[in-house]
Image 1 (tube, rainbow, N blue to C red):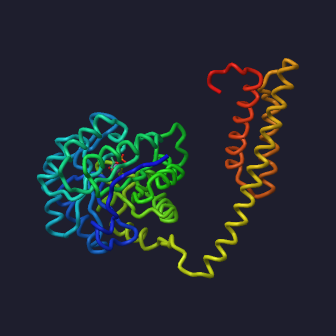
Image 2: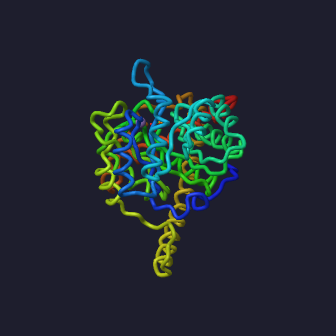
Image 3: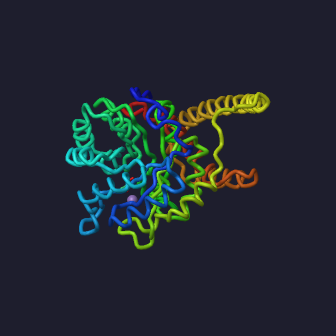
Length: 367
Ligand code: PEP
Ligand code: MN
C-alpha cells in the first residue's frame, strides 16, 4: 500500500524542533486565566512546544460541555502574545477553519470523529485551499487505515504541505486498560506507506488515565514517533472535559524528562555490525517459519480432502480446543506470552480452516 503525499519535512517549517516535539495544553479552553496560567508554565519548560486547546468540542453525548466557542480564540491569541508559543486547535467545519485563520491560530488538527467522515474532511480541505497552515490529522475512531490515509490525501490535495498524522488510539469493543486501543501496527503500516510523514502520538486519548501516559509516551518514542500531544491542565481534576487523563504542567515535565530518547540511526559501526549479525539470525529463522507454515498448510489441505471423502465436518471444536490448550501450555514453558501465542494460533487455524473449506466446498465464491 502506498500513500503519496507532497509534504515538507518538519524541520523545514518548525526549524530544529526538540525531540519529542511537544503539543501540550488543556483538552478544552475553559477560562482565559486557565489558559494563560497553563501556557506560562508549559512555556517556561518547553518554549519550543505548541500550545493546544479545544475550542469546539465534539462530545459523544449532548448536554455536556461543548467548548467555549469563539471567545476561546481570543484567549489563544493572548497565549501566543504573552508566551510566544505556537497555538493549535481542532477544526471540524469550514467555519471553524475560517475563524481560526482570522484569529491567527498557527496549527489546525482534524479530530478522530471528523476523520471518519470524508464529507467533513473534504469541507475542511476546501476551506484550506490556497492557505499555508500546518494541519495534523488524527486517526479515525475505528481502525480503518484507508480512512486515515484518505483524510491525509484530501488535506494534502488542497495544497497543505505542512502535515503530520496523530495516533490517538482506536475504539474497540474490548479496549483493555485503554480508553482507545493503540494500534502500533497501523502506525508501522502508515509509515511504511509514506516514510516522510511525521507521526505524533496522543497518549492522553489512548490511555484515558494519567497513569498510563508515561508508559505510552515511552512506547511512542521507541516506535520512533516524532512528537507527543499531551493534555495539560493547571487543575486536571476539575477540568471541564477529560479530567481523568490530563496532567499538570509539573507532571508533564516529569513525564518528558523521564523519557529515554533513543536514536533511530545506528551511529556506531561496531553497533551496526552486531545489529546486522542479529538481523541475519532473525531473517534465517523467519525463513524457516515461512517454510514450516507452508508445510503445515499443505497438511491442512490433505486433512481437508480426507474429511471430504469421509463426510466429516471441517471444524472439530474439541480438537481445536485441545490444540490451543497444548500450545498455551507449551508457550508458557518457553516463556512466550499466552495472548501472543493465542493470536498466532488463531491466525493459523483460520487459514487452515479456509484451506480445508476450499477442498470440501470448492464453489465457495469467497475463497
Ligand atoms: C482532543 O484532542 O481533545 C480530541 C477531542 O481528540 P480526539 O479527536 O482524538 O478524540
Ligand atoms: Mn480531550
